[in-house]
Length: 197
View 1 (spheres, helix red, strand yellow):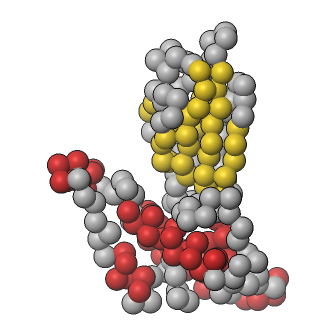
View 2: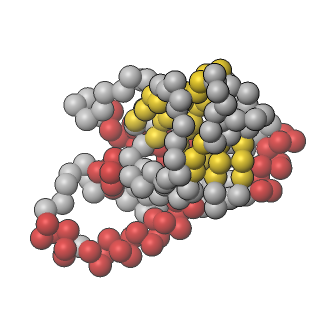
């Protein structure tokens, strides 16, 4: 994977959710993502948006399907990154959909496009971080200051999951990308991502 640290964190969350069989029923057992959406088209084009309910600092997987000329239409556009990607039928892209505004370009007449999207709601991560429970309003207000401080650390930790350009360059030559110290940090209990594990 090009995102091994994300994969590790997502696997931890899915593992915790699977411990309670009533909480998670996936149509794709073993998937690292908690949700799947099928945009079946025939003109599966999205307007500019961010997926605000996904984990900020997390990833989603978008797969392109259909009959279209990827060189002239159906492009995947990430606005803040100023990137336009020519996705062919069967190609996938991983991107932080809660942070980057994205959309598709129009199709030409006679073309069709669909997509499959896998993602995980930030609420599932929060559920795990809160010890698999919802916080009552009064407890939520009392812990707001503590949560805000934890949130700042968690935010930094989430963004440290993304590989650096150097890591990608090294992985391109070796075929490997390591976890860095994220596994040891989480297992030791020093992580704000999994404070209760």
